[in-house]
Amino acid sequence: MNIQSFLEHHGILRNPFAEEDAQTDPVFKEHCINSAYHPVWDKIYGDPSEPATAIIFGPKGSGKTAMRLQIDRHLASYNREHPTSRINVIRYDDFNPFLDHFQERLSWRSNKKPEKVFDAWRLWDHMDAILCLGTTQMIDRALSSNEDSSPSLFEESSRIHDDDLHKIDRTTARDMLLLACCYDQSTVSTFTGRWDQFRRKLGYSNWYVQWDLWLGAVWTVLMVVLVVYLFRTDRIGWQTSAWLAPLLSFLGFAPYLLRWFRCQRQAMGVRRHMRVGKREISSLRKVLMRFPPKELASQPLPRFSRTDDRFELLTKLQMATKKLGFAGTIVLVDRVDEPHLTGGKPELMRRFVWPLLDNKLLKHPGLGLKMMLPQELHRDVERESNEFHERARLDKQNVIPAFAWTGESLYDLARARMTACSAEGKSPEPKDLFDEQIGYARLLATFQSLRVPRHLFRFLYRVLVEHCNKHSDSQPRFTIEPQTFEAVLAVYLREMESTVS
Image (cartoon, rainbow, N blue to C red; front, side):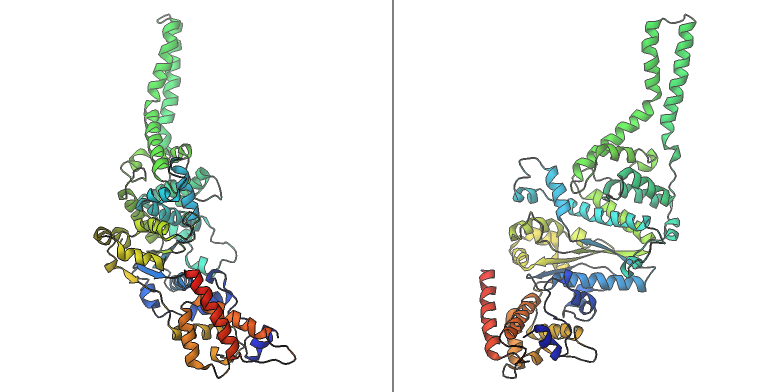
């Protein structure tokens, strides 16, 4: 018996339980993302006009990624409705590039074992990664043309138009270019070429920054002429001329060389202490030398092992995006169990996530972190010391200790997916697929035992396949018998227990 024939009998056009991953689930993205919500949705999403942190602990398959995608989609809708007070969304969910760069910067003794790599990871490394994502995204939006063809609704909701850039004052333009210098990670073009393109887009004039170089060149020409004149008039000999001309030329280039060494030192500091991104000292120095010295003086750079500079740079990013029409910033943190270095091990995940749990960052004004964390980490939180809890102040955050589903909520979720896949005017329910002997109460108890959406979808898919394999198209049966239901359930529950153990 064909599964599609079984589903079509109930008015369902496609299998609503075939997909398990929210990121590749068309049913969720096209329909359920705007209609199927977990009961704690309001607490997690909050009010975008006042970005706030929320921390969710949930087991695998509980729908954390789906929740993150829902937040992302709803923030895009919010931005379309509030074009002058949008929310800047930073998606901090792909950690492998940052961890790879970080691992390369460590000594050969430390970068071999994941435990030592994560022991060296600090809060400022998380902040550098977030600043890399936010800065690169800001520059991409600024450099994209207003006439780009067929932008998606999400892209349009967060686009930066030329009119917004024309409102930027010189101080803000300087801050944006400083962020680009330290954190732009784009590979679309060369680093210096992209920085110059961004500078021209902002209208930041720096033609006079090379005055010391031109002064040195003019001074050198004058000194060479003077030495030649003195030599030809026999006032000095050729030996004196041989050392006097280079010495006088060097004195002319002294202001330029002093600035060169200062920028070289700053570039070396950034290269050494900004450990999660790719940067070359020579290109960094070239860009730093394009800032007028007075405008670069006393500006924060990520060239020390401390968070103070990063918080200042984070504030600069927020102020810049605010002038571009973004009233707040939300960082979506997800998939911390997927980086290759963690390998899904709770101990390694703990070492990676714990530096991020700092109240100074979690309560930073205008910033909200939506963190989707594995359930195993909540047990570690409860065992932590008072010092950790004083630093994290989780009592001040919106914490969901267990992202749990009841049998009723899972039933509603399955019903929403079936409705999304059904023909117009049809509204099938999960109980319609099963024999009346099973009953609504038995379905709720079964769904409760499955605990999370991923297990629910897997079980329903298996039971559909098993039922259809037992019947032919010539003698179809359009309800699933209790024997098939119980047999598939028993096998699946045993598999669940063995996986957990």
